Length: 385
Image (tube, rainbow, N blue to C red; front, side):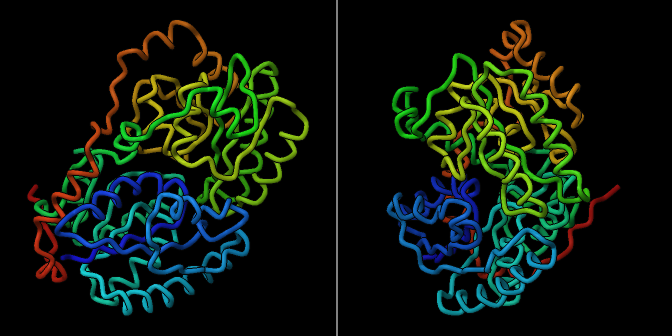
């Protein structure tokens, strides 16, 4: 049995990993280990470790990286704590491979620890571009530390190879989020309203906005523009999902809370979890913000995404995604376009550039078949021009 240690630090990332974790758990050739860290262990972010426990997974270790606030100094301290604690966990668990997804700083810390512990790393969703974020260099750095790569498109596969990775170790499996949509049993509107203790309006927006971490002091100003635009649609229900623990995230928390207090048809949730989040997507008219989900999963529901600012600049986008500048007038114009009958009717045949369902099973198949013995020593793959 090959021991696969999965590290998860956020609600969104766990939602993507859940069915893959189940596939590893059910494999006769693989043994699942789980380390939980980051926002999962914070009451402020919903203490989402409970979602993992509710799904009947056994958690092998908890790594508390002491998320205090969203300053660069404290995030740096959290990474340092993480590197030390992950190293201790890996020594105890002795995994054959560490599996990580994405580009967050707690995952970066886990990857550094695995590299120094001489444990092979499998990286999911590498090769993607988010030019407005600190996540961009973190993602590519994790790719360079990794030995197996599971990417969401051919373009992303080529980018990982361009980083010098062996094409034989880079697998285009599609996006895990699309896999999750097909496997989740979604709630109908009445059940969802009872669970969330809220009522949807006749028309509704779902808003997820995260800080643009490579821009100083822009998050507050940009989000103010979004809220001003939302005020022009007073009859619409507004459902906010809270931002991640990124730089400048604190100010967004308080702005959302103040907006919800001032409006009876606005609601905010620390963590919806994937099942409730996807159920909301069945109901709402469009999604507003700058989350990767708006580009990857939302197009599968045939509704528009208003993608604001530069946070996701560089990522592949379906025709359902409307890019706009972070100004009140541009956001208002984009929302009106997304609500127009002509635009909405065009989405019936929209194609998602992130592939089809089945990513989890494709990854499990590779993990079962590939030998881990000679992964550590890598050669830089040179592209011939």
